[in-house]
Length: 341
Image (cartoon, rainbow, N blue to C red):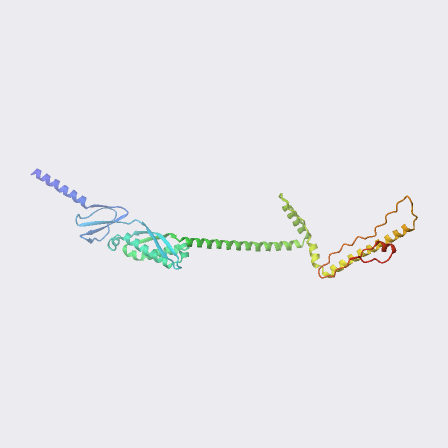
């Protein structure tokens, strides 16, 4: 009897151990347990820690409550401005209701992935290329709203959606590069023109300031000459007075003609005086007795140097030069003979 009792006790203990082993479950901190008894959902969700179920009757299904990072495959689409692009994204989500995530959808991960792909294609078709490249925050918010709306009923919450990369065709990349280069060149020209405008204003103020002090302009000229001569170069600087140019600009053609006529009259007077002096020299040489041993003195030159023709301005009548005086005519004291042609 004792042996049978001991065997029975041992059998009961073994059965209890087997039951405990079959009924014991451990739920981790980041998991929640959903119990199905004979296929029916039990109320309440098992929290983290040690829990038990009825063996062969209850079934415990664990659901991960951590944030899941899921990459969205690249999607090809055409933007609203008819540009072919290839966009990929990444989505962050987590399960907030373990029971709904198990009951309402067969595989919530696959469902969220497919919903993200379709929403991404829809966003591509509704947006322009500039929005995809520069206004991604707004597109991310719209994409998150489109995915989060149906996933709420699945017990899933979309935490964040980000567009990772936008791939463009090579032709579009070259076109955008040319556009950016043209825009940078335009801005450079505008900045250069603005700098020229400011410099011209400063130079105008400096000219007004120097006009009151003429010595300042001369000092500035000397500083410029010193700056040019600072380095070893072959540059030759000849300062030319600006007042002389202003005088020539103010002179009229009539004043220039009068100046030329005055110069011509002075030249003719000089020629007549030279002719009289030559006649007196010839008379003195005729009246003097000839010396046999002394050679005759050379006669004074009677041909006068023709006068230099002054520059005649445009529109004025040219002035005829003074005629040359012949030697015989000068000796006889008669009027000058015009030159032979």
